[in-house]
Structures are given as structure tokens and as C-alpha cells.
Amino acid sequence: MREAAATTVRRLSLYLRFLEQSEAEGVATVASTALAARAGASPAQVRKDLSFFGSFGRRGVGYSVPLLAARLREILGLGRRYRVILIGAGRVGTALAAYPGFAARGFDVAAIYDVAPALVGTRVNELIVRDAARVEADLAAVPAAIAVIATPAAAAQAMADRLVKAGVRALLNFAPVPLAVPPGVAVSDVNMALELEVLSYGLKHPAP
Amino acid sequence: MREAAATTVRRLSLYLRFLEQSEAEGVATVASTALAARAGASPAQVRKDLSFFGSFGRRGVGYSVPLLAARLREILGLGRRYRVILIGAGRVGTALAAYPGFAARGFDVAAIYDVAPALVGTRVNELIVRDAARVEADLAAVPAAIAVIATPAAAAQAMADRLVKAGVRALLNFAPVPLAVPPGVAVSDVNMALELEVLSYGLKHPAP
DNA sequence: GAGTGTGAAATTGTTCACAGCG
DNA sequence: CGCTGTGAACAATTTCACACTC
Image (cartoon, rainbow over all chains, first blue to last red; front, side, top):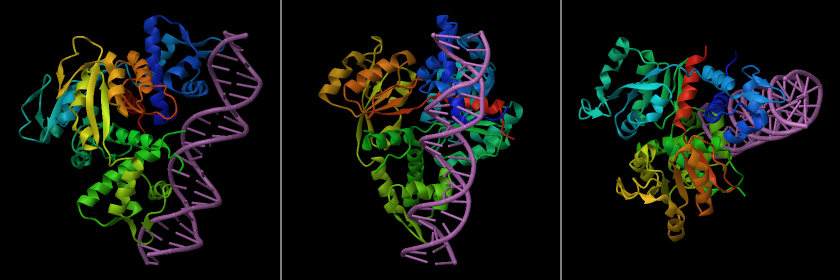
């Protein structure tokens, strides 16, 4: 199986969200048209996306909701739990530590780190903030596949390097800088300031 | 001036971040190579992106840091303040109300709303939660260009429709559904669950 | 008939390569 | 001589259109 583009994977995620809702409602099959409407894509694109991984629809009928949902979960690598560590116990870090969406999708926040001595040892939502200097030792003892970077921009790349060297294979980056990582390491960026600037641009240059 | 693609605008945002840092360090000019390294793009792409809006570089020298920064702020529509309202006082909404990155970039959170009677009237970081039923009346009295949607998925589209009808022209959407809006309304999505699933996919299908 | 699966066409986005200016 | 600005080549993505199956 070749590598699907990140934008395709994002859409798969949206399809799955819709399928889970349909599953709950007891709907048996859905057509590409319905999936498309919900995911903001075209029906043709839905079919292309799905056919990339095989053909699990039935012509004249559509896609079986439970079958397609199961297949997408498998493709996305869900259906298992991941150990996640959180770097940075500032505003963003503490908000994330309390975010129920992580655990709901199988991502368990196991530890939170910071460099500030004033924060180390304080309690953040069930977790005691640990000294960031200990990250490597901790990961050597109990590995984690995913780390969330919620540090200031200036510290993000150095921390990413350390984490990758310590065996972390996926980074969720909240710092407003793109991270350079070796191949084989996955990075997703969440950059709210950037999204705001996109909106600001949209306000200034309205579509006709 | 034509419309630049959202992906171009995102890169402009990254360029600006680097320029602001260079400005603070007193650097006078930067070359496309330096901008590219920082924004995770190619030098050619930086030049293409910038030339789209005019030519403000000097051949053999590079781009004047203060000039280019000023121009990018203008293009992005920064350098003014926006009134922002926040819909949803749950986990995400309250975290956002406390987020300093909004004000830092000129976005002032003026009000927060929720439908739950238990939340209405409670205090969230300087603001008293208001009844979501009042949104239209409030906007009629004091308009806001931007609204942040931090409601459950099921409520998001209906709320978006109401906000647009009430004159809101840009939406920052934290609900995990794409929003349908009329042309002329800007939408940016922030979807953490989706980013996690992209990471999960990346872990399952590592690049060579 | 309804709706998938898929090559081929259209569009969009990126990189190349080099002329031209400071 | 270095670095921008840009048309032209290239690559990726999206849409079209239709044969095919249930």
C-alpha cells in the first residue's frame, strides 16, 4: 500500500466521524454523496479516497457503515491506545492535560514536563509536572510513541530533536514554528495564531 | 489583486513570524533562503509567494526586514484590532477565553456564550457567560467580525448560520465538522482530534 | 436505476532555471 | 557577483464522465 497524502488522511478522519454517527443511529449504508456533504468534499473525491485503499463499496447500494468504519479505523491505526507525553506546562500545556478528547480517541497523557523550577512538582489535572531534563531517562524506562510540544517557539526544535533521539515517533506541535524531523517521524501542527491570521486575511480580501 | 490560496496565506504568516524575530534582533535584510529555512518551504516558493503581491525585494541583497514585515501585516490585515465573540463555554471555550495569543495578535474576546443554564452567569476569566439565545441581539447592538465556535459538533452548523445572518464575517471553528457558509464568509478549522488521527496514521504507515 | 470504481482531463501548486537588476 | 522575479516544466490533486455491477 502506497502512502496517502496528509490531506487524504484528514478527509478519512472526517468520513469516520460521520460513519460513527451513522453507526449510532443504526444506518446500514451510506453513499459517497452523503459522506461528501458531511466532509466538505465532492462525491468523486470520496470514492477516490476510499478506492485508494481497496474497494469496499457495493455498486448501486453504497458503503456498509460498520464495514467501512472498521476499515477506516484500521487504516488510521485507531483501535489501540497510545502513551503520550506533554512537553510544556504553560497555558496550552495545562489546557491540553485536561482535554478529554485525547483519552476519548485512545491517547493517554502519561506525563507532563516543564523546564521552569517553579512549575516542576506542581499538580496539573492528576499529573505532577516533571523536570524536562528527565525526559530522556523517563522515556528510556517507559517509552512513548507520541509527544505533544507546547513550549515557546524558541525551545521547540531543540526539544523535538531530543524527543526523536529518545525514540518518540510522532509529534503534535503547538509551537508556531515548523519542526524539522528525520524521515519516519510524523508531525502535525496546530497553530491557532496562524489560523487567526488566515481569517484576518479573509476579512481583508473577501471572496465576491 | 487576485485571491491568494489559503496555503500561501499560511506561509505568509510564517514568514511574518520570522521577520518579527529578525526585526527584534535588528537584522536589516533577509534572503529568500533564510525565510524558506524558517518556514519549511523552498526559496523559490518564498519568492513566488511574495512576488504574487508585488516586488519588494532588492536583487543581490534580499528583502528589507521592516518593509517586508509591514507589507505582510498589511496584506494579512493585521495592524488593527478585531472584536471576537466566543460561542461555547465548555472545556475548549474556557481554555480559549484564557488564551493570551488572541489579544497578542489583535483579537479581543469581548463575550462568551453558552446554551446551558448552569453555565450562563458564571464567570470565565473576566467574562460573564451570556445566554446563547441573546447572540443576535448583542451583535445588533455591538457587531463583531469574528466568532469562535467551540460548541459540540451537532450545534455548530446551526450556530454558524445564526452568526452569519447576524453579520459575523469570519469563523474559527473548533467543532469537528466542516461548516457550510455563504461566499464572503471566512472559515478556519482547528481540529485536534483530526490531527491526532493523522499522527496515528503516520505511526502506522511510517515513511521509509 | 442507483451508485461505485477509475482512467483521462482539468486544475492547482511546486520546482527549475535563468534573465536582469542592484 | 548575489539574489530577486518569473515564465516554463513538472508534480500533485481534484473533477469529470462513463463503464460496470448490484
